[in-house]
Structures are given as C-alpha cells and as structure tokens.
Length: 405
Image 1: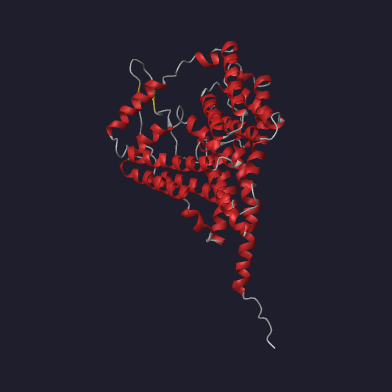
Image 2: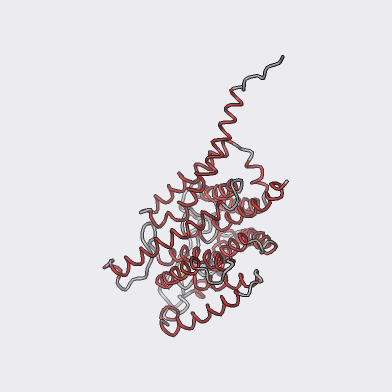
C-alpha cells in the first residue's frame, strides 16, 4: 500500500510564499493606500511622505511580486498599463536631449514609482471586491476630519494666519497645491452622493459641504472649475435626474458666491494664464515634434511685465513642452483609453466614481501644474491615483465572470 509522500521543502516554501503574499495584499496594501491618500495631512514633512509611500506601499507591492511573479502577467498586458509604459518610456528617452540639471537616474526613478502604484492597485484587484473603494471612502472621511480640525485651528488659533489663504498643515504648504487634494476628495463625495439611492444622504453631502468651504478658503479657482466640469460629466454619463439638480445647485451657489464674496472669483482676473500659455506655446514650437526633454529648464517671460514663470500652468502644455507632439499623443492616448472604458461601463457605480476623479484631474490640469511625472505629491491626486483606481476597478470587473464560473 502506497503512503503519501511528505511535502518537499520547495513545496513548503512555495506555500509560505503564497500565504505571505496573500497577507500583504489583504492587509499591508490597503494600509499603504490609506497612508498615501491621507499622509500629507498628518506627516510633518514632504520627504517623510515620500518615505511613507516607499515603506508602506511600494515595498509590500514589490514583496508580493517577488513571492508571486505571475501577477505581472495580467498587469503588463493591460491596455492602460501598456499605454502608460509607452508614454513613460518615451519621456525617459527624452532625457537624452533635455537641459535638466537633475541627475538622469533620479528622473528615471519617478515613472517607476508611478508604475509600482498602478501595480499595487492591480494586486488589490485580486482581494475581496471593492476593497480599494472602501479604503478610498475611509480616507475621504479621515481627510474631512483632518481638514475640519486644521481649518478650525487656522481660523481661531493660528495668529500668523490672519489674512492668509488656507493651505493646511503637515506636508501641505501651498494653497494651490492643497486645493488639488481637497478637490479630489470633494469629487469623490460628489460622485458618491450622485450614485446614492436616497437624494438626502447625510455623509456625502456633509463632507462635500465641508470641503467646499475649505476650497474657497484656499483661494484657488481651479478646483471650482474642475468640479463644474465633473458635474457635467456626471450628468452626461448617468441617466439620473439628480444631475440637473447638481448643475442647478452649483449655478445657484456660484451666483451667491459672486454676490457675497466677489473677490474670491474676480479680484485676481485670469492670473496671467493666457499670457503664460501663449509664451509656453511659443517655446513648444521651437521643438514641436519631440519636445525639449523631460524636466528641461523652462523660463517664460511675460511681455510688458517683469514677471517670469517656470511653470506653464497647464499639464497638457507641460507634456507638449517636454515630449513634443509625440509625447502629447501618447498622453492623450492614456485618457482616451480610460474614458472609452468609463463611458462603456458608466452604469457601474465604481466606474462612475473613478471616472469622475479622472475628469476632475484632467480639468484641473488645464489651469495648473507642470509635474506630470513626479515623486508622490499633490499632482498624483490629479493624475496617477485616479488612473490606478480605474485600473483596479477595470481588473475587478474583468475578473467577475471568471469568479462566477
């Protein structure tokens, strides 16, 4: 009679490796995402926020891939990932003709950080359904609490804040950049309310109201514009009647704001944006096809003024300046793939939420920003976090038929 052979050491090691990777996916990666989404509010320094990402999200992600490299197979075949790799590879290649003063090794690391972020989202797609969306909701609540406490301190206790625009505390230091994050979470709560069954759902409405007040306190008009575009997207993508209610309430609030507090919108005019964009376009025309290279030195002198800018205040122009028409085409391809999928699957509540974040980020990038490839910072909330969330939702949706079998 044959007796079953004892498991070999290689089999035992493989079992331990699988269990370790499952534990990391189930617990470590959600914790890392929560830290990424909220860390700038409670980490006291920007460099610490970078280390937070490296230690709590990037390291566990790479550990899972080391244990189970088979996860890479699905990841690298995904059209969104392929499009990003093509774009990032071309941008890295443009370092060869860039005038950047930053070391090439440091520049090339930045697209890899983003790729690891997307990889972490794809790994979480193998976890229980909606795990990452649940983390996003928890982060949204935590951010509102942190923001409310920070704003309360700003108003009542911070003596140096008198007459200043609100930016937040922790790793937040610039009101325009902070507004990107506040707008990101305002978009999340707007879309969450939009898909809610009941019209008067307290949590999304309360969070949206709190973030709206804080966005006004930053003095940044970019998130207001981007939220308006997002509301239009929600109306178009959804057949629910409350979309028109959203636009009506938004228009009413805009009129009230102009009447009560006109300086918030009108005082600063267009902030030299048309002049900056025109000068950026002239600079882009010098090397229109391939661009000036990643992280190139940029100086935009505004005529008839003594002002000089090193930021085109438009992410698409920034891509055009760095990568030329070739880079811009690859950049637009990313958005085209994302929005085609989002439109076809717009009846999926998670897709509607995530696509709203992508629309918000794109609209906000039309008037702000240069750092389209960077270390973890505010611009990630406009671009790469929404793309990673869409990748997560996409992969989870694709896996459902297999799970049903």
